[in-house]
Length: 218
Image (tube, rainbow, N blue to C red; front, side, top):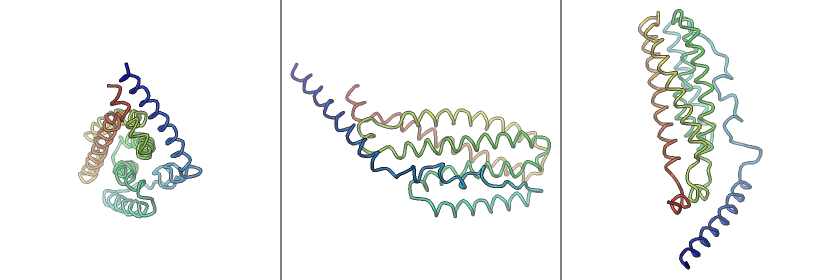
């Protein structure tokens, strides 16, 4: 009986410290949502004027230019945001590439455009979810584990994106385009797939981290 009372008391004290620490962490956060993804709207693909390539050579030049722009953007971000953008830039670059090739892929152009826009919306969602998980303060993580809400959002987007990838692969096989364009499309598909694998691993890691209280309730 005494052992149970001690355990209950210990848990109560831990919860008290947890609430206090969480309130303190929130009060110490950046004011007015500074450094939050979404505040830097010019970073997003949809905010940029999209120019369409007229041939495979122009497409390659546009992709290279966009890579350089994204590298410069990274230098203007804080360390935390740099990690998120660096990883998810693979999808952002793929979105730019797919939109740019709309006029040189034949009749599938409109479908490619719509899929690219879906990926663009998705990457904004996943970037916010990843930042939410990353900014979970250490004490909350220690007690309660990973951010399951953020993990759930990531998993939902991964499922939807993998369906889009399959559609994109089917469209690639139907592409009335030259080999360099088809190869570029395949490269961007692979980049998107790699990012989905990373996000799935991130989501799983968040869910597997149960924290101290999760361990106590086992």
